[in-house]
Amino acid sequence: VFPATRVADAFRYMQQSKQIGKVVVSFGDGVPAAQNVASFEAPLMLSAKSCYLVTGGLSGFGLKTARWLVDKGAKTLVLVGRSGASTAEATTAVAVLKAAGVAVHVRPVDVSNYHQLETLFSEIEQDLPPLAGIVHAAMVIEDSLIKDMDASQAKRVLAPKMLGAWHLHRLTEKMSLEFFILYSSATTYFGNPGQANYVAANIYLESLAGYRQNLGLPALAVSWGAISDVGYLADNKIISDALQSRMGGAALTSDHALSMLEKLLASDKSGAAVIDFSWGAIQRVMPAARAPKFDELRRHEKDLNQGEHAENIHDMMANLSKEEVHQLITDLMVREVAQILRFSQDKLPIDQSVFDLGMDSLMGMELVLAIEERFGITLPVMALTEGPTIARLAERVATHLLAQEDNEEQRDQRQPERDTVDAVVSRHADKLTSEEMEGLVGGLAATTDTGVTLVQ
Image (tube, rainbow, N blue to C red; front, side, top):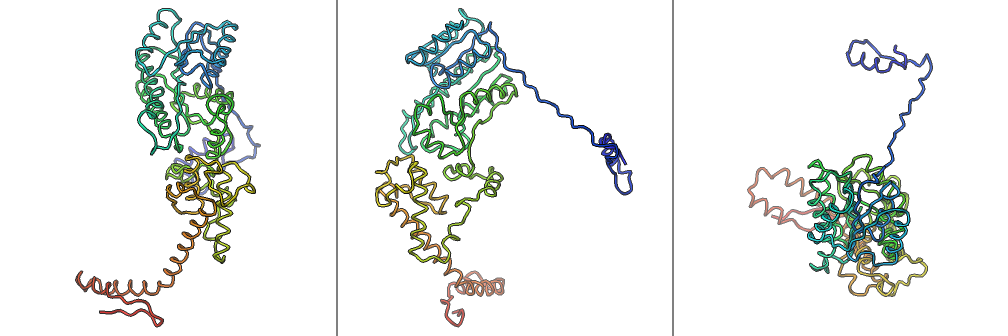
């Protein structure tokens, strides 16, 4: 018997295999007080004698990050954007920072142009305090389904993120930096319909962060979820709503995101995703979320999910007439379209084209994926190019599901025939040549009321 205060000794004794019977931990002297070791993360403190560079730092989340760097002690900022401080937002923000005593240097630089960046770094080296940190937040978004995307569209999105990040890496490879932060997107984990170029660019950033760490250089790639109050999604409410309908969960605020950035910098991680999302929502429309690596999470979600999607469509169809099946499929289709379009179900006409209701090509792709998840069938994308109505789509799905039911019933009726064939083949396979076996199996007659007849 060991007192609870000596539990480590109890395990060491058991490890030696000397005991006969049980090794007991006793609480006869009371329960030891719990010892909570408080985790302490020192707040980020930046040097007032250093310089910090933010690409894409004159708008949106990049500009918010610049303000955050000042809150953490930065006194010299270099903010880069292709057009400089060309907006009222940028002009006002720069004026406020300067009034607070911050030296703000705005440069109209295209980060995908190496020579422009090289010139900027020469200016920093000659005229400004030592460069201590970089945040690469520059981005361009130009959505398009990949089948419609041309090379110029891909390049416009890839260049600022990929070339910009690589140029920054080359120009700082010999420098001693406190941090080298790359702003990526959580869509690299699951993809996003219409954003193949954007997802590819962000995957490159995450790979570059790993490469830099292997070289012993500072690097942090942060895969952000949707941010609601600043940046692209704040300025494009319709796109933000569509993304959230696919991801579920809630969008981040910029303050919350930056507090997480501080934690990630303190933890010395090479990459992490910061996102609030629902597995139930995301796996409906993102095929990558159904990859084998997420099996455990999907099982957990299935246990929690008590909604309609937990129910098998064939179980719902059991004992229903064809007319009732059509009505069931129509009701479920209305729910799917209403969720994508953010409409009330009561206001959706089932005899009007979904494109006339406001659905675009990206939403159409989302609908195809939702149908596959909800009904277990693959609907060709071309089915949506014919101006389909909800009623027509529901009829097509119902016809397909009813055909599946009929085929399953026929297979059940032919089970005795299959059992007989299996028995004959099992009994005679080792005695017949391949030609004789082909003749035997090929000569099976149709099932009759009296059983199966084998014909030579």
